[in-house]
Amino acid sequence: MSEPVPVSRAELLELSGGDPWARWALPDPLAGAALVVADVALVERGGPRPGLWVAPLRPGLPAGAVPEGPALTAEAARVATALRLVREGLFPAARPGASISAPAEHAGTARAVLPLSEEGGDWDWMWTEAAPPPESRERLLVELDDRADAEELRAFAHAHNPRVWTRIGEGEVVRWVGVRDVAGGLVAVGGAEREASGAPHLAGILTAVPARGQGWGRVVSSALTREALREHGVCTLGMFRDNDRARRLYRGLGYRTARRWFSRRLAGS
Image (cartoon, rainbow, N blue to C red; front, side, top):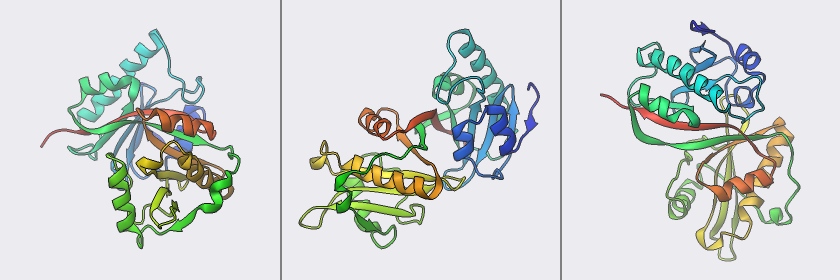
């Protein structure tokens, strides 16, 4: 497609060859405008982090695969074409401060076309439909409440993670589990939010610094993943790309990467 064409989520799924991100991250119906131009989807994102997804459609490639060589260069040109429409005001929601999520492999193109700030991050979107085996220590997990335990959860997150991203105490996390030591202090926590599609999305997986390397992140993640699969048949998550330890953990639980995102806010007044 060379001219902007409005699309539905079902049409996006067909055009993308059933891309897991389009299936499990996007709502049906879509919350805002969605166009395909030059085989690149531009999809408005609502919710607490509004903005725009910029997703090349790759129906001939396995989920997570990136074209190489001349094919990647040609795709970059198509991404630039789509982003110029954003710059020219085609999407009123793409105003200063809105988040733009473009493929990590086209970060340079996004910077060249759009005025972007440095606020944001580089992260991977992952999913699984395969249940990991139970961990014996899951019997030690306790339930926590997003609102009633918000103060404790926030303090724990800020003490042990310099990049707190999860929205604690706002009702976004629908389930928390954790592990406590003999004195009652938190050792590890993890939560599950909802994607815009309704699919479970792991969030806030965190182990206290002194307890790292003991496998508590796997215990928490395994339990939450299996519960999500029992109820919905899928579980998703997002992780900072530079967190190699987390990547090994999630891959060991059966997660695969579908999209690698470069997310920044539009600059301007």
